[in-house]
Length: 350
Figure 1: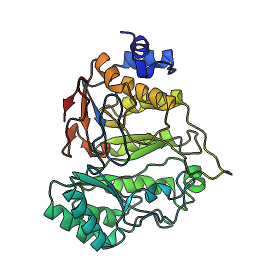
Figure 2: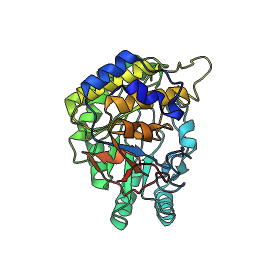
Figure 3: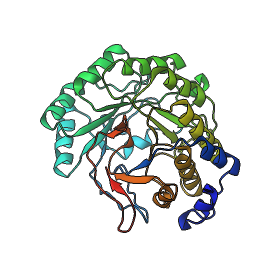
Figure 4: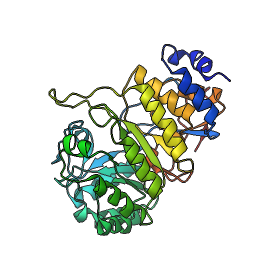
């Protein structure tokens, strides 16, 4: 089976450029599972010719600090938080959760801006989070933890959250220059160690190209994940929409991203490996997503147009879920989901 010919025969993918040598290596590795999960969380409006929108309320993102963040990292400047629902007091978080559940939410991403130590100050909110989970046990909460010590990790477990997410950074230069942070690579590994020591489902992220669009510490981060065995791993590609003019980011090379996908699949053969929401748009997105499918990743959030058809042509059944990809752990979907494929598209519900 020639994967390049399969890609060329799919109308939305015509014109993308894939490396024949890498595609051949992916074919020979034969690491793909029979099923591929496509995630359609409602963080942003999304639909393709193959997947319909799941609506605005299925999986909202909530920030306990609103748009405020002390770090002002060069790729974000806190602007990502500005698009989220603010819940800046425990009382407001309770109100927001109830309101979103009334509107049909199945779960939420809970995050907030960091202090100068890259910690999100959740302490006042843990009792409320526990209250939400006790009142609505089917409502799923995925929390962005930032850096935590052992006690903080334990409090997160006690609050009842369903998934703990953190970015794993493997280069000191990136921590210092991009994050403006006086912490070490060891601090990120200790956070990972502290989280996996709990009973939490731990889903760390690696941001590819985080050092101004260039790869630097990604493989060190991958080695950390090999050592600590999280529940699942999410790979994303930097989207520096808000980078300052004096420190611009390049667009990571799709071939280098695809190579990392294959290396990560081989390094973590028994851990669900997912492509998250963030990555460049346009042709680069289609190339990245095609590499993710062929490298054998288990899931893709907000897939490029043509991915459902490509999955079918590669012999993989597509499952469409209206949830955050961080809720996929151990091969099972934790969050309730439904079928969001358009009529005529071959897929199976989660």
